[in-house]
Image (cartoon, rainbow, N blue to C red):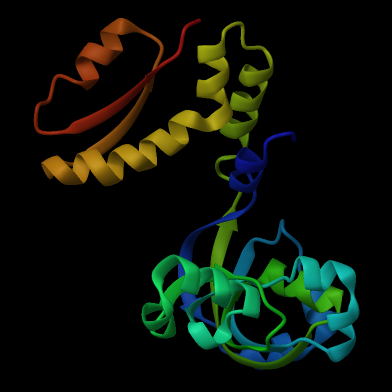
Amino acid sequence: MNNLYGGSQAESLPISDFKWHDDPQKFMDPNFIKKLTPDDPIGYWLEVDIDFRKRLHRKRAFYCYPPLPETKVITYKMLSPMAKKLLIDKIGKTAAKNYKSKKLISTLQNKRRYKIHYLNLQQAVKFGCKLKKVHRVISFKQRKFSKNFLNFMTERRKNSRTKLEERLCKGTYFMLTQNSKSYLANAVNLPFFTYLTSTVRAIRVATAKSSHFFLVSYFFN
């Protein structure tokens, strides 16, 4: 599928039965992790300790694109000499010394109590990372409930006759839904609904209630 956003949404997603796993230590078995698949009816989120072996630091793919990103507060002492110089030139030496900023970063530092999806853990172990400890595990039922719809939208995108149809089918309206919900619906403090329709009459029915905020996507046949 030539659709990264749609492809990720078409994978198995959590739907119900969230609960703590009774035996998290079974995930310490590499063979058990290796047997897990994306199509399993049960999925897992784990809290783990992971170490990067020293030999991985010498791999070009690893020091260029380290796996397992995390959000950390970056301070002045953590910056490289060049980054320190650029920061001082921009905000001054005094302000630079007190610099703190929360960033999403990828490093080769060992991870502690790192939250990770079971497929990402499977990939990290395959790359050579060492699983040191499993603190706890949440299991859940999962299903590819949006796959058919997203495949349909991808086909509509390929067969689009106008730029408007292509943008809609590409996934712009997904992002618009999230932005509208965050900025518009919350601003007016109304319940938010997304409504897909292909008829003008259905639009009138959907937007008749003034007590709700609607995002209407209209598709031409």
